[in-house]
Image (tube, rainbow, N blue to C red; front, side, top):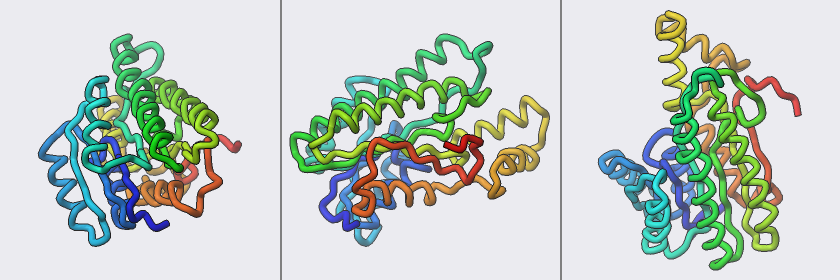
Length: 263
């Protein structure tokens, strides 16, 4: 797809998966705004995006999206910088590890605010803008392959991300006729903070050395490795492109085959 003149907002876009998505779209000519909580990390990411030859522009906005006021500020500032938004990639961090026995109420409350309700606020605001500016647009949630199956140590993540999949389906239905498409990308183990946390947990809980812990994570995948951020970004680039215009209201798993569900 020719992304020239597309106006893209990527949340948590200063590193890892979010930054890879921003780079992928910038390389095809989009003007990109990214947000993050850390100013220095954000500045470094924006500078790299601006050095991409076809990038139509790059902007950084400091925001803590766990706060409702920062969501409103983010969209207001993005409109000032871009003029409108026709593509939103909702990226977020990892959730606490644990099972029903050891996840405390504070973890549930924090995860609800930082993952599920954040996705609601962001997509609601973006949908209103896309409908008003029209025609069309794309909303993509970066979720987790755990949306399809319950994994013991990822209970909180599984529950919240299942809610995001329902939200995406609802949005796809309610935005019908506007040309706005809504989809979910569900990655398995990628080179992210969540994977690093899992490796540290294996070292601590099972006494594995680092090499053995990394091998344990990688061997859960038939490909024998974890995914790269660039591989995920390529999928997002396809989803929001012209070749995927009939793709809507769906969740696509990208995990190298590690999930055990078949449908």
